[in-house]
Length: 161
Figure 1: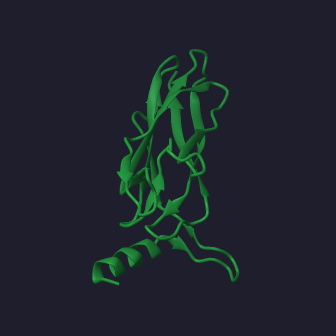
Figure 2: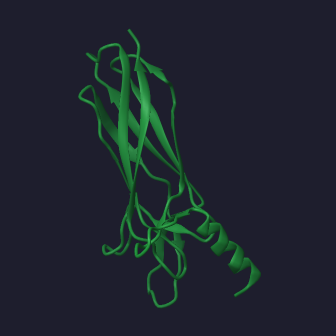
């Protein structure tokens, strides 16, 4: 094992949640959320961003993996009644060639930004809205994949009068 490989494995291990005895470890990437404008008017849209940082040497499948047996990275927004999702935009995947596979994997690695466009209904009452979401993913290294995982996140939006 080369020193560079050891450093990649150590970096990956820093984000692995330590399991209870007999459980398999899971990968917990650093995840943050941001909203383009914290205050919006009824009848307008706002961009909500989820940023995920993966350690060096770790990747997740794209939202549209080439192999249907692989776990896609997927953001699901649980919208309140006065909010709808006008679309979710994923970054462009990169190709990862692996020995024994004819076709490269379509993956995300490093810093990943996923954007959701949230439309606020024209009749939305003034006040604070909590917009929860779930990120589903499966982290992998060149040699091993962690169990699929889900992270709950949320955005806070203030609807103006």
